[in-house]
Image (cartoon, rainbow over all chains, first blue to last red; front, side):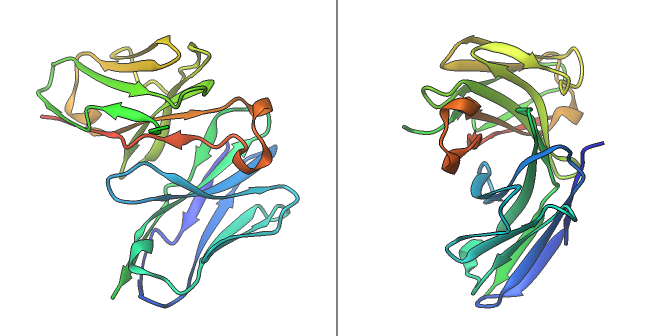
Length: 112
Length: 120
């Protein structure tokens, strides 16, 4: 069964600190993996997309990594800001299908 | 473009009543998705359409749920009769077809703001 698991479930960090969120998946065959950010009361918004051949991709203070062999991804946030407080959802797409497999997300709270 | 538009943003109703959620996808998008999000289960796909045709409704929980897409710019999700366990946030999302997008937006689904449904 295709699954996406994220850890930790929730995280509290001080403003300015770094953090890393983890995503493990069993989706096969793999097409791509996205990290979405979901602010409270809003819909998810894509941060990055990783395909099979990519190892690292950055979007400002967000850096995503992908290890397709171990089926793991991480999202690293550098110099966190209060506005980074949100849920971060890992989403994997199975090759050839439109349907996505969603993780349950990591709730990040950046404290002043 | 204003993005995906959903209405209402909040809906409170009593058990047994009919509920209709509405969605306007981004103009030109070929796919439309309906999701439900709860704390316990996260985001779950209910149904999706391609060019207004329902492709996969295996996520629709039961016959009380129905969805239509009468044209490329409008879709509805109806619950009749509603039950307290239907309380959740319902999202609509749209995307372009695979062979029409460039790499940077490859199959990205754009989500609406959601409708928070509370069934008492």
